Picture 1 (cartoon, rainbow, N blue to C red):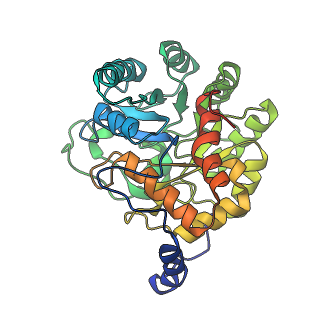
Picture 2 (cartoon, one colour; picture 1 turned 90 degrees about the vertical axis):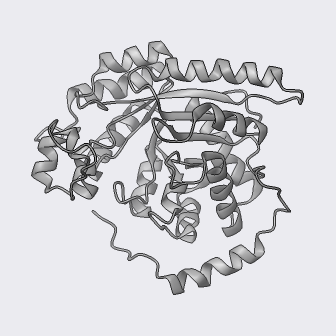
Length: 343
């Protein structure tokens, strides 16, 4: 069921935001340095064509003291692990050549299922894992839910369309015909999708639910809970694609799923009230949540700055130092399989 709570009016948001902004004083910082990101791990970072440059971002993250970046997208959609490996090698060479002692961040590759319109398959996912991907995303931009909520580039389903043309939101039946969907007509998970969930559980690879509808999310959650799988993630739960009520978030967290809150939700483009995000994390429990950027597009700050901002917002509204470390370092480390972060 879609959220019934109305968007927070500007006047009301001022009442909650002004005490937070006036009370948050972590100390002076000197741009372009990015303070308050030490050891942070961004598990949702974009760097494909026309977006932020992956190597430049990795250098900035390293200088700023971050721990790592998980690239959801990078210039090579078909072989993302190869592209990230090249970034990793170039970053190590750069850090070694620097006069200052800089710890290069970890760089991980994610792989996006169905990016070319083909149906997700276990075999494709196996190939991505074998090549080095440590996270898999179920369909996103060409999921039926996305088409129904915001439309899409018409060339994705019509090769004769103007490449720059973007459709209006599509009626659900048309969206379903053109986009990905994870369920059978009887509401059960498609066998191939269930096999992919089991594969991720077997291999210890993170699985992000993409832009799944509530019905798909709930079926995925049932299987995740049955498998005892602890690396399943739902991105931007307040976004129009996911649009979860807090009680629904709590049920999903109880199934072992991590709620990944993003700067994208807080940005002017979506405009989620940071007080609401903080309250959701407080109710769900920081142990079940992560913070990430979901940045890369030129209308956003770079991912390092987005991590600084979202951590700063959540600290200003009430997360203490241990909770900030949990949502931005320890919990993300579990998602990427990094076991060398001190507790």
